[in-house]
Image 1: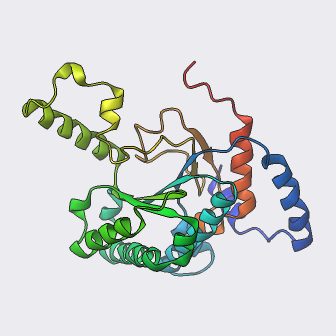
Image 2 (image 1 turned 60 degrees about the vertical axis):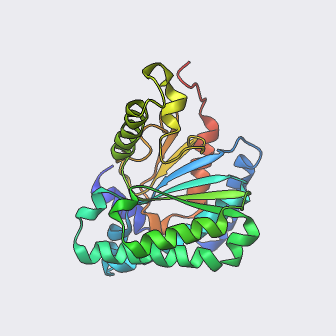
Amino acid sequence: MSSSQKLSANARVNIPSILYKLYEPFLWSQIKNGPRPHHIGLIVDGNRRFAKIKGLASNEGHNAGSQKLEDFLRWCWRLDIKIVTLYGFSTENHKRAENEVDYLMDLILKKLKQYQVDPVIRREGVKIKVIGQRENLSEEMITEIEKTEELTKDHDRFQLNIAVSYGGREEIVDAVKSIAKQIQDKQIVLQDIDEEMFASHLYTEGIPDPDLIIRTSGEERLSGFLLWQSAYSELYFTVVYWPAFRMIDFWRAIRVYQQRERRYGK
């Protein structure tokens, strides 16, 4: 899709409320009884472009994107989708301007602190896990990550994984290093290595692979997100920028997922 088409899709006039109210239950009737993904991976993209077309500063786009996550989680809980993994901050994002990196990290810190005391997180039983290379993060960030994980570790209804300082290639390299050290320490032998063992050395150990991965903004690539885990994931790309993503956009993704036949290589 061209840049002008993406711009049009995100700057469109809102559907009149009466039409939206008619379309929403129609779409719900199509998906409510169909199969639902157990685990959704989410690549949130388009915050800065959303801000640009709205005449706002980039940071305002990131703010809007952060707020949108709360809506998305509610939509998932309504469908009883158990796990969401959010691509929050990639290893490549460290290369952005220092002031933008600092702002994004501050947003993540605020989100973690919010989840520590959020009654909705407690009521819905949401376990929070942060995946990524923590050695690249500040001491304050690591402290808040550990505190959030500790406070929610016994929640067992839903799970939110936040990928921070995450890269799929780095995750695989770290897994290889971990296995190599076990061989070096004579804890395992080469013949012990199989897919199950390898997966146990990934950041997502114990978490089932995503059934569906959604990426906003019209970019059609994974950008290093869950490279090992996404082998059989269904992929859904939408031109809508993340802050403009609506419930009906989410339901459309679910409808497409339900229409696909998952073959797992067969």
